[in-house]
Length: 219
Image 1 (cartoon, rainbow, N blue to C red):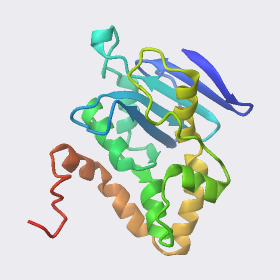
Image 2: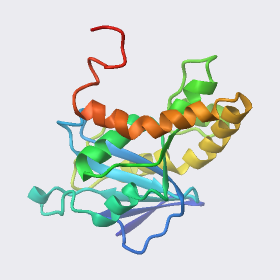
Image 3: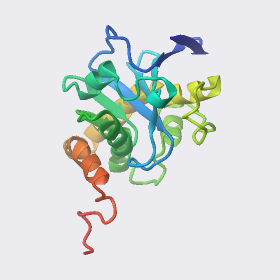
C-alpha cells in the first residue's frame, strides 16, 4: 500500500489487488472506475476508486493474473459492491455499474447517479459532465487531463492517481446539491426509479441491447 498527498486535506490510498478486509467506509460511498476503454466486453477494468466523502480516496488497482496478480479475485471489493446496505454514488453510473458487474460477477446495488440527477433538474443546459457540475454547483475546478492515459500500466503515475481520486472526492458534496434540487423540483421519486433500474440497464448493455435499444420505437 502507498499513500500520496493530493492536498492538505485529501489523501490517496492505493491498494494492489483488493481492499483491506477491515475497511469501513460507511453507508454512502462514492465509486468510480478506470478501464482500458469503453467496451465492457473487450476492455478490462484497471482501477476502482472509492471515497466515504471525508477527503480520503481508496484506489484498488486490478492486477491481471497473467501479470502475477489476483485478477478479479478480490473478495473484499466484491463484497462491498454487492452490499445492499451500502449505497454506491457514481457519475454516469450506467458505465461503472456495467464494468463492475461484468468484471466482478456481482450485482452492484443500490446506486445513485449524479449525471442522471443533473439531467433531471438542470434542463436549462446540456453541460452535465463531472467537471462542469463541480465547477457550477460546488465551486471546485477539476482536471480531466489524464482521462485518456494508459490505466493498464503496472505502475500508475502520481498524476493518474490524483486524477482518479478527484473523480470520487467531490461526489458526496455534489450529490447533496443535486438531491436538494431534485426535492425542490419534485423529481426525487423519478430519479430514484431511474437509479433502481441501473443494474438491469447495465445487464441489458452487457447482453448487447445498447444498440438497438429495446426501449426505442424503432424495430
